[in-house]
Image 1: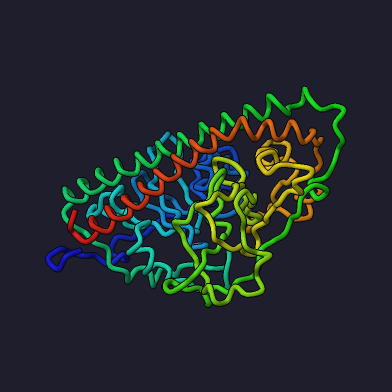
Image 2: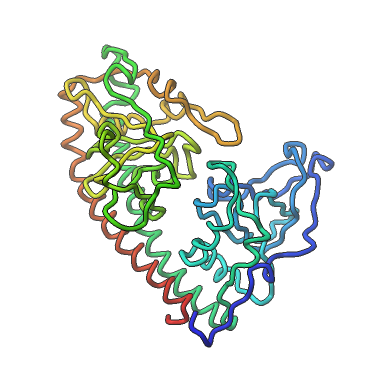
Length: 390
């Protein structure tokens, strides 16, 4: 914000006197539950009280929720309309509620780079799911608060820009569906009864990444990107949450350098609403290095093609085989990835499949490039908006 604009401490916008409820005392009542898994799935959960194991916060439509856990993942959403049920949220959310702030505007602020940089400075914990933002420290972060009319104007501009990004993502999803349809038509259950059954480890090399130390990450100078679980999305790599490593320290780590057409799988929190976090490395993703808890799969070219392997691992048979553990940090095992069995079609059929999907792959690359440009534009709009220059 410019010097003439006003700011408000985040703590002054946080909800106070939040009620709580123990849903298990109302076993047959249905609740709308806002939880971290629900956010990742894209919608609140409709859950009976008997299926909820602990007390929850009572929230209301228009509240803005900001995740305290694994803070580098920017989880922020606005509580939706009342659907005739009590609305509750897990304790992992910081709840904002104020008549001085427009909810849609605040959501943009909370996921924007300026706030996020301050937010990351409030965390404690040793890493992973144990990292948490401390609300008492978050409360001291200043939030730009122009007039409500100006907040609504900014939110409208950012919403429209964000909608353009959503359309590009939707186009990419449709192209993925087309590729999967071609895969099923060529290699589905009606085919290959006489093809040999193999395990994934028989036709590919599978490794997990290197334990790069986060305290040695760099933000400037000659550096390479690190492919972490947060960067792997269904069908693509997203570098918006970027971690980098000094290029001078990559000696001896060549086995962890990713190549074009490698397939990567996020093993921790391996799914979001669009599916398992599995992607193929494209030319624009290189150079980059593989981080611990991300699996890299590289085919033996005499037995399998990478396009075939990529689409194979996006089929329900694979996701059903690698069921994530029901733990604090759901994860899939590299052992289970290696043990995945399937019928291996002749290499000729696989290369024919490659040729059919190459045109789709080029279209996807065009859309991904356009999406990258939109992401850069959106970041610029956010920066200008929160400086009062939009």
